[in-house]
Image 1 (cartoon, helix red, strand yellow):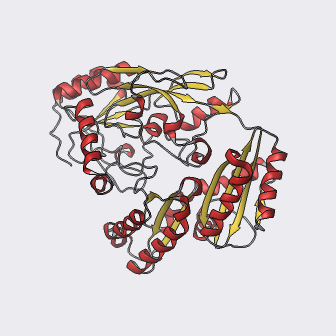
Image 2: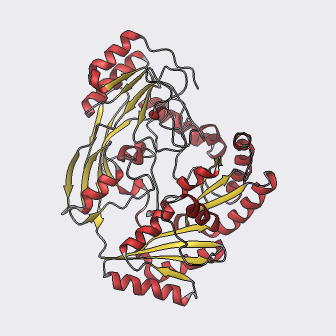
Image 3: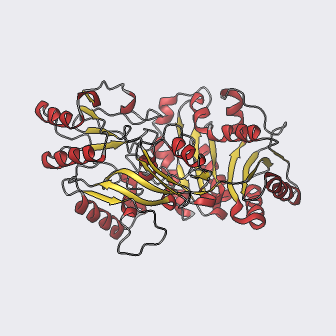
Length: 470
């Protein structure tokens, strides 16, 4: 929107008083890392960065913001890819960083739950669970820097959705500060609670537009006793989907990950990822990365995975050690990073029904390369939940900015195919700024009206992350 009014010096001073001078930064330079996202697509400015150290301080900030009509943009680890965490360029939006809310308040192995503050990194939450022989299964490539509050606000997905679901499925309760400074203290760890509306669901995936998440009660699982991980070659996506169904039929929920990777991703890894090696000794057109996590031994998991590959006549390699499995996963989780040296990439986070994955990829590949000759489709993602990251790298030696300028027309082609396959244009990254204007094209007028009414009820002054989602 880029139309927020300037924030006066007097008002800035009142905000600074809440957190203390050491936890505020006035007029940070535009090149500050928290004012642009990872790919450099979205840039913003802010008159003030605030770093509250408690939910009480967040509440005081929001009370003052609502009273004065000051827009607030919440930010976690700044790993989002749709601009939901970046202020606009007006210089009138205050940035609220949750990075100091880093307490792990409780880890309860007997209850299979933990309570953590919003600024705890995903990796630290996973390590805290592992310390008591439990698993917090959410896993994404940025987990060393992304934060729990952002994960929940964007309903993060990742590589374990197949078995454990999105972030939404892992949240038992939330502590949320509303726009007027009131606080919902909902950190219950109950699995069953039908006492009225499930209010926490309003804030999961809302991208900070309805309230600011300050802490979460999370669901843990028993740590697996054995894992087996395999990199396998496939002729095409249809063969990968067939293998997925065969694996799921044999081991059910023990199949915890099943990722689809095209050959071009391996080439990018070999060029740009230190220590990357050809995973199967010889190239294949497509690959699947499959993992079984079992309550039984590693030997049992390996036996099951070996039987799946043998029955399907599949060329593959089962990791001989945890270190080799980590090497397989390092390649998969680095796919966004290794695209960056290849130039400008137009990225799509979409989902289609599992059975539609092969047809969608084939049609989208053909449509994009016909529209932009030389463009290099890089479709990879999560077979088990139909989430495909349909990325397109610029032509080799081409003009990157000229390619970026064609994003709207390329997006239109891809999104039309997504709609034809009854899919979603926002699978796990959210809406943010990037897809805000597209939302009314994929949601009915009634749905849009309900969303606006919820927003108006919880944030009548419109101070929370304006210009995002709606």
